[in-house]
Length: 188
Image (cartoon, rainbow, N blue to C red; front, side, top):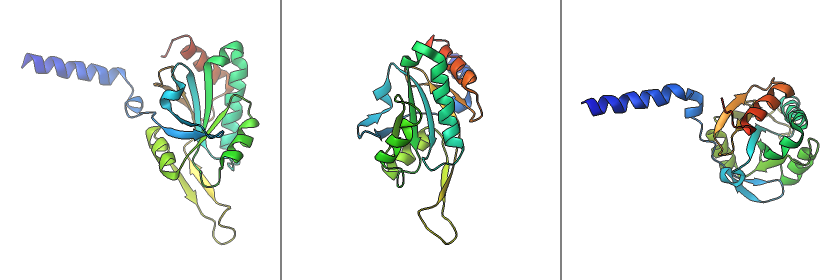
């Protein structure tokens, strides 16, 4: 009986020390880069990861988040070499590798666009608890649809563990500060 109570107490302590949103986050994915290389979450072991989900035709949230990420990297100076910035498309039908590559170039040479089949995209979105929904236009060109999606910037440590999901309105200074903490091993 005492052994069960101790095991229960240890389990509860672990649950209390880890935020619920991080407990439900797996961060696992299998996708392809805009250059056609197949990658997964383990590909980037040893690097701090900064990741956003979206699509290249996004009119506002995605370019703003990516610009914030780019500015945060600039603020890091030499420490930026320890961070890999990733952008996962939730619109693999329209966002070809060529389209992603061109889009990523607008934010800097470090940025890696990730895509895959619809199944791969769905699996990555589930792993990060990202939601998205395609909205077809009423009449008109069916290729001119919009995509509602979760917004934010994920920061993961060198082992791929989620440290924080920052809101899409976070400033470059705030993102750079969190990245610095992770780079220096202060994952709180």
